[in-house]
Image (cartoon, rainbow, N blue to C red; front, side, top):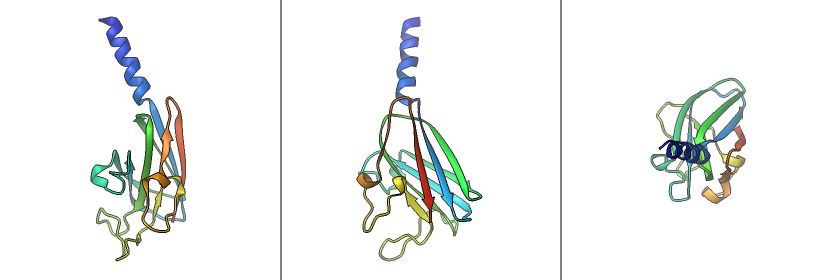
Length: 135
């Protein structure tokens, strides 16, 4: 029984002991900010299907977040400041964001954003770091 408990602890720690650190630089932008983390292209840009959705207050010129217990794998995220506090990223008729936003890897799409262009890897027992410039 004791060996089973130790094995379970090691298994869960190895699978979910990873963290993601996101450093966000902005030009004096402040406000309610939304981060959505996605695990695949099927869920990408669909916050209701995101792996994690995090709401936080962006302050000063730089904000850092650390998200713990992320399984190994490939991820991509979106982030935006909700300037009008309606809970969604406002876009124009061409789906171009009207509010400050960014993607993982500082990916800047020319057309429709893709998961493959924004994806990054979370590896076993390593902290993945993303430095994002929010415009």
